[in-house]
Image (cartoon, rainbow, N blue to C red; front, side, top):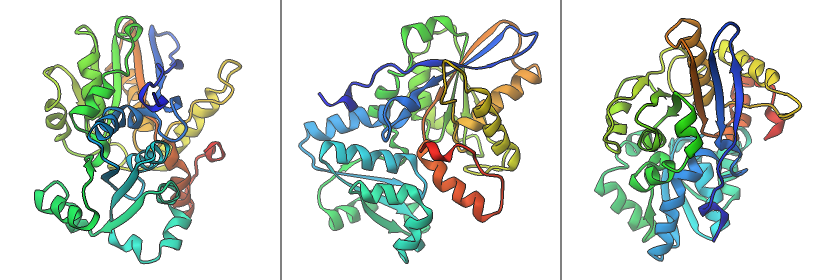
Amino acid sequence: MNRLFTPKDSVNQKFKSFPDSEIEVDIKREDLLHKQVSGNKLRKLKYNLLEAQNQGRQTILTYGGAFSNHIAATAAAGKLLGLHTIGVIRGEELAKDLEKTFAYNSTLKNAHENGMQLHFVSREAYREKDTKAFQLQMEAIFGSYYHIPEGGTNSLAVRGTEEILTEYDTTYYHMICVAAGTGGTAAGIINSASPHQKIIVFSALKGDFIKKEIEQYTLRRDFEVVNETTFGGYAKSDDRLIDYMNTRFRESVTIENPYGIPLEPIYTAKMMYGIEQMVESGVIKGKTRILAVHTGGLQSIVGYNKMLEKKRRLKLSYENQF
């Protein structure tokens, strides 16, 4: 069986200790599962791709923005499994000069090089992607395909993300933290966590709609959602966050972990920053063992750095690792 369908358990590494405190923060390195199909994307794709193969489908169609981790992972997985992949990409202006787009967007460039057929649509059309009319239009253009939603979240994806936590994780830690975009990974974590464990979901988006998205896939209602209000919303940042990421990377380089712990700016960095703020403000206190799930997405760093450079801002210092 292809190793994509049998991912190993990810390792937990110490991330942060706090002086004069009994609080421990470890990070679960899902990003190390696979170089190109890493983190929660591997988990979310696993049962979807098995189902596509069971149905005899040779084409996978899915959706994403210009820097989508899901698009990158689906393209890489498709190449490994010999499946044709189609990415419906938000932003028709990106198709006007593909050479220019690929020059600054490593996500789309790598997806293209991995054989994904990119289909660019307007933002208005993209908002209709979940409608039957839009999907029939895609069938008229591309023929029969196996459909995976934006971000990969559906019931099969949640089944995959339920495999992230190990028995050790569900017994040793008091609190599990995970970042969320569409909620599929968070739902899987919530479903597999022990009843005594507190679950905090750090949304990458403004607004509180993510809780309802998660509740579609879990019966538990005792999880907490922290909305993104610190850095301006999805994929936005300031030099404070970039400096935090560079600092934590330097501090995490040890003899045991000579490569450090790289975070990405859209999900994991904001989660880790948020956890530290909750500890320092006393929201989290007492003897607490915390496990934060690193959901991958490091492929976006090269493109993100190009954006930061264009804006003449502080850049991430560990781009050369990817």
